[in-house]
Length: 447
Image 1 (cartoon, rainbow, N blue to C red):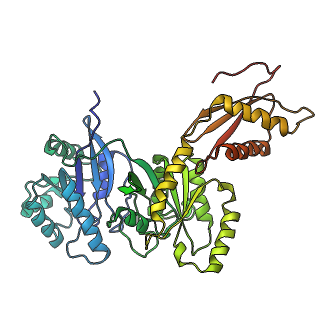
Image 2: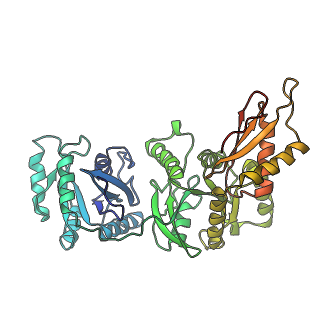
Image 3: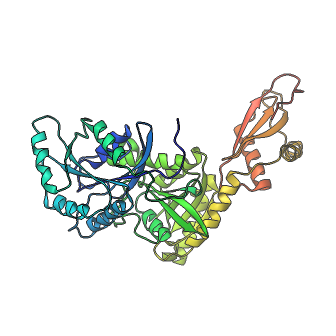
């Protein structure tokens, strides 16, 4: 029996860096979703995943390592973890049993003892009975019985999940509105200003921002009010060079970018105005087009350019982005907020194109006139005849041309260009495919 849809209970996984929080999350989810690497502090933002255990769905929030004394980047992470604790229904504090209770763990426990939500203390890295004794010492944290688990090997993780379900309230604490906001993937290579733009949109420090390229290791969903409408933004890890040469974190991050594009309806590809359009930028755009998502290209740092660079950039865009001339384009500054409000109109227009359908009769009248004026080139002495055109799908618009013979790629591009001239389709890829119908050509496909 499926559960009624609605807001899910939230479980926050907190603890200091490198105690195995992400590994535990992966164990809960049964898949490698959280970025795991043996470097303290890989998970820098809070990341939400949907989990299922014994027929019950809930949200797991993986947080950055928590350190009350931290400054700089560490302090930002602390705020993220504290936020997760404030909005959770159940808190899971993870402690490394091999190390024992540190000052940071004690400070965390002191705060959590005052919390009004259930707290489950997990002693991680308990791989055998011998290490269970060291786990028992964590009673000293004053959070009740430590639950010994091995996130890496899965030892006792099922028992822990049972405990978490038992601790959940009847109704989730935060009633989040379901079903509404359009999904936007914010993508681009590292350090073009994705997190800064997201923070500008969200008007809070939703993503950890640092001037080091590639700071954002995981995507972070944010609900953002923009142009009087709520949008769900996914901020993704910057795509690095070819995946096969990337390190572990970058490999997972690039897969995550792919997943974010797939999960989104429209992608904002952010380019830096003060840098040349690179192969990496091109690759991100290709990913969006191949995924068939609506596309808005946002040029960041536009306000920092002098007249020469403006002209140079315009030429670059014309040359390098010729294949996506149809993309919606907006010039912005994430740091000053200039042009950011225009983004909503571009997103709405791109989504409207992405979902637009051309009436079949209108489409065929247009294509018939077009073919009469410019018939398809002959192949092997015979010119193919176009019998009928239909729009097979939307999101993105897909057109099928029924023809008596193969249509050259050049002619298909010509048809696409003419369809765009007639109906716009700004901000969306469109697809024109051909079905060859042999014979006298008097059959008319349905649809």
